[in-house]
Length: 348
Figure (cartoon, rainbow, N blue to C red):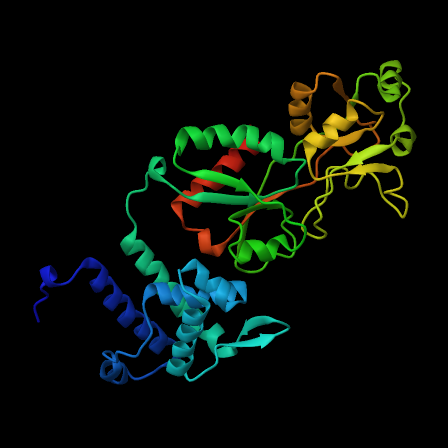
């Protein structure tokens, strides 16, 4: 049989190839007879192509139909209809509702490797030479506000230089950042790699040091200059806290230093805006436990502030943080470049 490539676009050929390959992959999993597949290869009601297979995988990752459909430009109604076509084809519900979330059936878990393989193969076939200068993506990330100023002071100039058509958005999340990441609400999370789902990837960041940020006329600064400062002086000082709002996924820069039932007693001001904290500290005797990178930026913006080291008996190392991303963006070259900026920030 001759293939007349001029009659078919590459997109059509790729679609037909991946459709047949997916059926073959599923056949291998369930040991179906090959001649049975040949008889059903041309069924126009079969829902398969690479993008629709990726749609099913996204439902598995997000636990929601409408949210998964948004990623592929589908309305909630179209998303539901597409899922119904898959259910009719497989003669299995594929997902069932539990506590407001769609959970996969055993059948889907057994089928998913074939879906992932077809998406991978088609992604390889469609991959074009990547030039970050032509990237128009809006990259969305979330991190503790105490880290954001110094991080963006490094990352943003490089984005403007290397990808002038791209943009970046910092998203403040009060809860469930991992769910937001897996649901494609954000592309990247700077947080703690604890309790991550199987579809998450992470890379540890280099830990920095912590210090005490305060105004130059603060009594603690005089104590430090005299060499008489103790941990008790730190515990008793009124302070600013930059809480993340995240429980398991994040700890703030002062985490691990103030412990016990009364650890929050001396917090006078809580904010998720570093610049508000720094401005308040120039007019009050409040202190802040800060990372060394954030404090460097604070000193540049507010000359009335200074830093002193933590007493030797207190841990100076910052909490261990990681870059976390989902499997959905793992192979995307633009996202790989975006992740590398944060990794380089940590090293430098």
